[in-house]
Image (cartoon, rainbow, N blue to C red; front, side, top):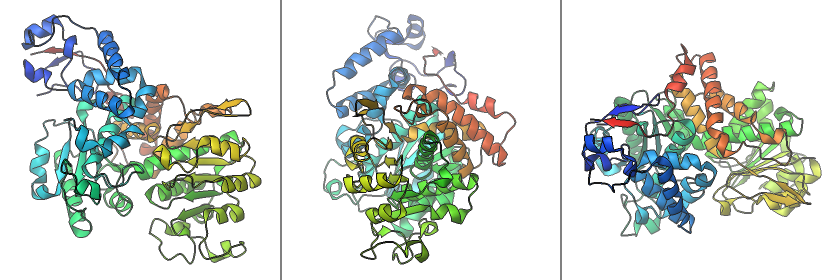
Length: 561
């Protein structure tokens, strides 16, 4: 049994394990850093090399091992192996090199890891809830040995980044996200729980792979799927009634529907919809502040009408409303382009999430068009958007003609190719800079190196949800929120925007350095909790104390039996 490892940093922890049982627990193991007194008390003598390492020794050894690996996926395997063996060292190590480790433990490498999951599998904490055991979910969840869990990240593996259905391989996403909750939000790793809902896969390579570790069955849908998700939510609420549940990488047909159904039933949010929207809004606020303008005065073209695109649209509209526009006025400024072109009055396939952004006949009557299919280029030529956002997973969709046309009509085009991994980006930052003659303000979904234009180097900010969700989660937990509201995400976006380096340096990124994210997340948490209190969806006796009680600093406590 694990002692009190959460909350305020413990100095002494009482445990009832001894010998190899301690070494085999990733949440207790210190490896060669166990002191001689601990080795005597816990029966560890002879089970470890005799020399006692300092944490600095262990970090140096880990870094040497890490650097011996040549490819990102090899580095990922090294880090996951360390996490599976000694989580306390893992977090002390990655917190020392956050900028270098982030692309390995999360995007873009986590996508490759998802595709190779059944071949590089390492045992980690977490739950695999497979449909064939649907009638035993409470029993299976009860198998998890830790009683106090603050945050769960769950996926069904259907839409992993821009890579599509990865089935059981989607487990890399909850594992990766929760490592960032700990690294940047301060949530103790023992109080995090990654879960995958294994409901099959429509990926035929996986269905025909004899090494595939998931349920080799076509992906469920309809009533069976919905009932399984419902059973899951009820079982989680029973075991962990105060937990924060983060929905992650669900497919287009399910993501928003699930969010809407359960957002008031269990403390939860969808990071792909709300987290992506908030971090994008933050970058937009920073960008329009650079241009000395207001967001309410912009026109926004969004390529991609799925959950991410409509979520971004909703968040922009919410901010425009707070700046004084009505819902209708704000929605008219959003041009949503899906696979069938611009969502407009004669579009045949319009989802409920897209309906607010249907452009009326009067809006497009005077446009110069050649068919009923209104393309992104048509929108750029006729609507003259000042902001262009890509969440389409269509690499190269922002071509030279589109960006040159955009630059003709706006002094500082704001261009956000947000699809990831890198191969799915709608354009590269260098292309955006070249094709707008150096005028573009850019943020991307995947990490890119700085770009050079006319001798000046420009840092490219990554619209990475890590800037938002750890702080939102910490704030919601700290004030004991009953739901995560739109207003809480707006507060998070505004707080993050206030830290934009581009406000002081036009060649700088729209986002603060990764090394600052832990501190920024704390400030976001305070803003989120304050907004929750204002909206009366939280207990607000002392939310600052509540936030601090959830923050853990990576370290080794002293163990006693």
